[in-house]
Each structure stands twice: as structure tokens, then as C-alpha cells.
Length: 126
Length: 118
Image (tube, each protein chain N blue to C red):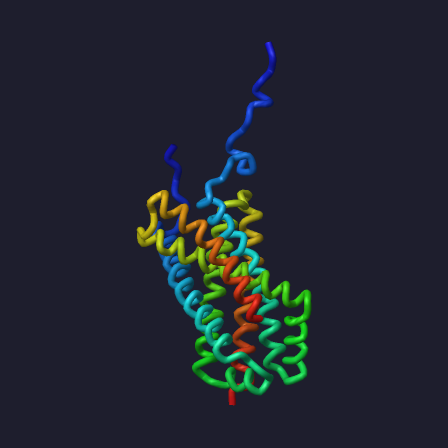
């Protein structure tokens, strides 16, 4: 008799389960939150340097408006607005707004679409 | 199976839950205020930037922002640690290091905001 147990799929493996959009936005909320936490020291450094003196201010501005700096700023903005929008969605769900499956799925998609639109708009403006 | 509950109040999680949500409201409001302010009144030079920061109300709003931010970061990272770091020694060590870093960041933020107040 063949040993089949070894090849049986284990459906508790998160990478094998096809995740619904609500789960993707939920994990996105955590990932963006963790990265934003890691960015905090850099934000503090930039704030301190920008307030120190005029030359330091210009130095920070040049760093943030150069090619790489601009890309980093836009990435940080995306992390921030995605976390903000999915956070607002979670707060609304906390108070029982949009808990039905249909509206929960629609709002999950909306956070992703809205965050991308926001980054594009701010990218044009910056 | 029933297991003995570890020591500590059963209501402690409620405080964390509320602090996480209430801080998120301030963070959301402050973020929208800041982005709106920067769009309406772009910072042209160091003079404008330091004049903005010389206001006591601005420093207070930023101070509350950093306090909310660090509390929010602590609760968010704690949730991640509780879900993914299972060995107690690992969760304890990572939590301790995180707590020290967040306290250091709090002192740093306070120093930035207090310095230069005439």
C-alpha cells in the first residue's frame, strides 16, 4: 500500500490558501504598519536636521527631492495612506459599518484603489 | 481543555484596544491636517519652516502626535509579536528591545520639540 499522507496538501499553509481580498488588506495593514514603525527614526532624523539650520534644511530638502529620495518619499506616502485607509475601514467595521460580505469586499478593494490614486496625485503635485 | 489563566487582570486587553483606536483617530486627523497644510502653504525655505515650528500650539500638536504614534506603534507591534513569535523567550526579548527603542524615540522626539523654545 502506498504512503499518501506525505503528499497530502496541508491547507493551513498560508501561502497555499487563496486569500480573500479582506485577508489581503488585513495583512497589508500589518505589513505597512511594521514598515512605518521602522521609518519613524528616519522621520525624526529628517525633522531634527530640517529644524537645525538653513544649510541643513536645504540638505534634507535636496536629499528628499533627488531621484532616489523622491521614490523613497512616494513609497513612504503609499505605506502611510494604505495604512490610513485600511485603518479607517477597520474602525468602521469595529462600529458595525460595512460588515456585510459584499460591502466589506468592496471597501477592501477601495482602500487599495484609493491609496494608489492618492500616491499618483501626490506624485504629480510633489 | 481548561487551563489556568496567567496572572493579571482579564480587562487589561481592553485598555490596549481602546488606546490603539483612540490614538489612530488622532494620527488620522493629524496626517490629514499636515498634508492639507503642506498643500495649501508649501514650505518655501528654512525661515518659513522654523517660524511654523516656533508656535507653541504647533509643538503641542506634534508632541501629542508623537505620543500617539509611539503608543500606536507599541500596540501594533505587540499584536504582530503575539501572533508570530511563539517561543516565550523570543517574544519577551524582542518586546523588551522594542520597548527600549520606543522610549529612546520618545525622548528624542521630546528633545526635538523642546529645543529652541525661547
